[in-house]
Amino acid sequence: MVEIRITLTEEQQALRKAVYDLCQLYPGAYWRELDEKREYPEAFVQELTKAGDLAALIPEAYGGSGLGILEAGLILEEVNHAGGNAAACHAQMYIMGTLLRHGSEEQKARYLPQIASGTLRLQAFGVTEPNSGSDTTQLQTAAVRHGDTYVVNGQKIFISRVLQSDLMLLLARTTPLPEVRRRTEGLSVFLIDIRNLPGFTVRPLRTMLNHSTNVLFFDNVEIPAESLIGEEGKGFAYILDGMNAERILVASESVGDGRWFIEKAVQYSKDRVIFGKAIGANQGVQFPIAKAHMAVEAADLMRLKAAALFDAGEPCGAEANMAKYLCAEASWEAANACLDCHGGYGFAAEYDVERKFRETRLYKTAPVNNNLVLAYIGQHVLGMPRSY
Ligand SMILES: Cc1cc2nc3c(=O)[nH]c(=O)nc-3n(C[C@H](O)[C@H](O)[C@H](O)COP(=O)(O)OP(=O)(O)OC[C@H]3O[C@@H](n4cnc5c(N)ncnc54)[C@H](O)[C@@H]3O)c2cc1C
Image (cartoon, rainbow, N blue to C red; front, side, top):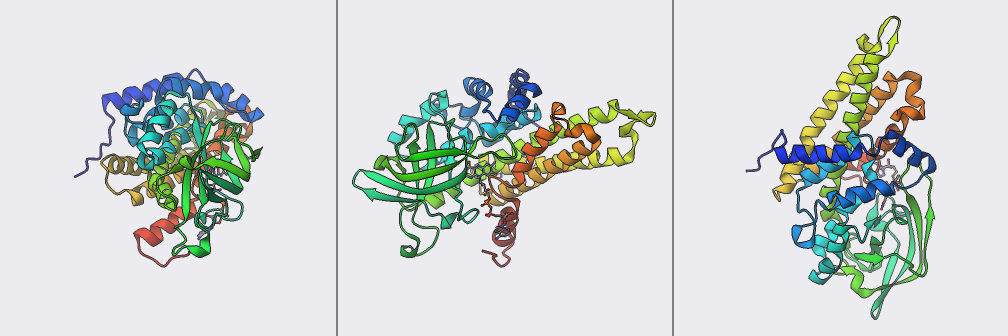
């Protein structure tokens, strides 16, 4: 039987507080300035790495802290709750999971301790392509084996933190689609060193939020055959394996955002006096905030359930997906309540509301679109007819 705790242990509370305290060194003005310049939060990420927080999920044997997904989620939650943006570094936590679960002992010994210490940064995950989007099995980037190397050709889009990473996890097709029995076969995962890689071009793509996102071009890029993770052709299954962790971590970030929006809105609704009274006394202002608070708290329970199942090694696909969906929607509801409560000031950059509004909106779309989560629940959990 899996026990789902709805209160945190003393250690978990201490972890959360330590992260919150660290984040106080990086206030809204820090994130605002970077957002304006679309620059990476390098100092913050280095500090979090130094504190060991980004190595939470790496086993102690490889230099990490060997914590569970719940603790890892609490770290990211607190970054967002404190007003920061954990999406700038969350991938360091979950991308290495593919290496941990499917890499050879030699690959794990070579990379994991360096990722844990921060000597090597692995925050780039190359899946999405212009012509395949959510339909990952249709991706066209090809890796063809030539002796001791694979030659990679193709294009990726929306690949984040490539210029801030030393390593990238790449999903490419190693067997052409017409030659496989099922479209999920013939894809392979590679862990590649992207520093000074001939034929590899990175073009930054400006987006609605500060996310260090890029278009990538592979023009006869030669990578060592030993960068293949696990067996050739099994890459899609390996990537799917890591999805539950990713969903739970993103759900946690949304909970953190939701709490930031609620606290900000409550405070402002008490302070702002219009028509001779605090605006929060008006039910038109108060009720949407109360409603959003309930949505965030309810979504958090699903996050806790998914995390408890994950950490117990139980199947948790349904719960992880539901948590991601519910938390992202709840945070978006809180973002709108907070923006409405602030009136025109919600749109003024110095209040940070508009920045967080843009940042939290992403969680409804990436790393997986909420429509695709609904399709997963409808088709895989409830057994309804497939749309794809
Ligand atoms: C800021 C940002 C950072 C990102 N970082 C990364 C990254 O680091 N690595 C990476 O690989 N990708 C990354 N992505 C890509 C992201 O994962 C994709 O944008 C997302 O998965 C959706 O793919 P798409 O944009 O091609 O949308 P499409 O697949 O074209 O879908 C468009 C719309 O149609 C809907 N739709 C499509 N099919 C169905 C269906 N069967 N049922 C219902 N609705 C459907 C979708 O839900 C969506 O609303 C990032 C994206 C953004 C915006």
